[in-house]
Length: 252
View 1 (cartoon, rainbow, N blue to C red):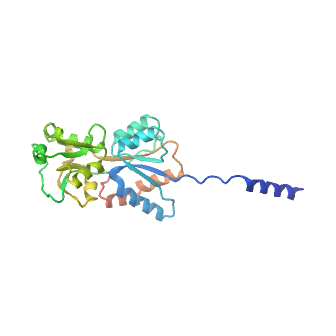
View 2 (cartoon, rainbow, N blue to C red):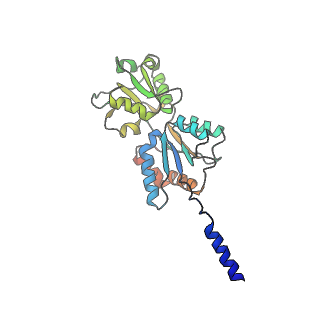
View 3 (cartoon, one colour):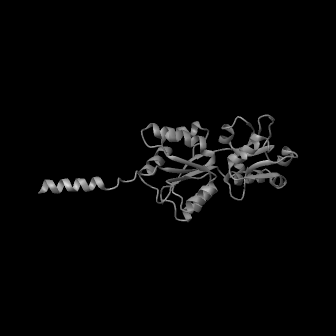
């Protein structure tokens, strides 16, 4: 009797639908981290772990998607404000937040029209741009735009330069304006300038001219499985930190 019952149980189990495979880890990361996240994903996959899905966009867009319920395991913002917004909405795992890297703010111009600028108080951004326009992220929402406005305000250049601003939805869009020659200059992160052969750095803004550029990361509630915890530990550990530094980011 028992063997027959056992065989019947096995038959019933075989007829049950197979469990759906676990969804891959989804990382929502600021656009300026594109090359770094590719390198981190490559290194993580080389350990035998499943490669995460990287969702790259501007921090505002990513934060709004997460708040709206988009599935994510980790959110990495280009400033504290957007991670604060996601935290306030109840979508961040308490105690998981860490700053993974920093960056520098630079003025870039098309590589076909090289020139330099001395970025100190009295710098005339409007004059440097001339009759054209300059690009950065929208200062009302995009982190790089906020840093850019703070830097130009500190140097006394914002009021005259603001009317010539072409507002972009993220830092890579601003970089593209300069690459195409649609903007005479742009303010982006040092790592963005490094990633492009079509722009050159005309000057580096003094650190004191703007708030520190930081990249805070945290686990997203509902997506904080073992893979998410492990990948966050990897990118904040020695190997992940070394990859970020190699990509041009600064230590947090």
